[in-house]
Length: 166
Image: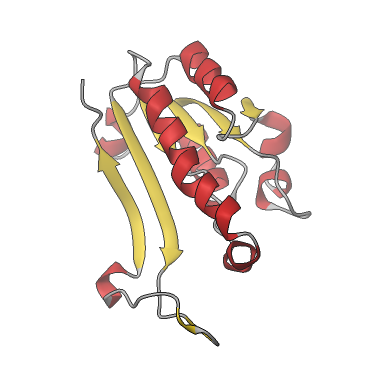
């Protein structure tokens, strides 16, 4: 076991987005290392999907729910009493974001605000970590430029960690 993994042994992790690609990998890792966690996510939208194919749909303890539902999210966090929140829930699909830009923004920005707000009011939470594995590159449309180019060192943001103020 790595030192980093050992340092998480006494943590209780609340994992949002556990049914997604990255969330399923996080669930597999947390399970393998023996860290106590629970998931909170929408049901997978596609079939097949990694969550079901890996068997986590059958054996994982978690809740199928929406981060946009503040009350349900707050209740889930309060009941689990996590020490760490690993926030991976998002609407990451580029084509869907073009078709539903307002909904994408709401889930990714307001949904994250809901998670942070719930974490802020739960006294057991000591740390919050969010991940954005999306690759940012130059995007163009018939109307003009709608994106921006990120330096290559920032193309993939793996994780950013913010300690919650107390």
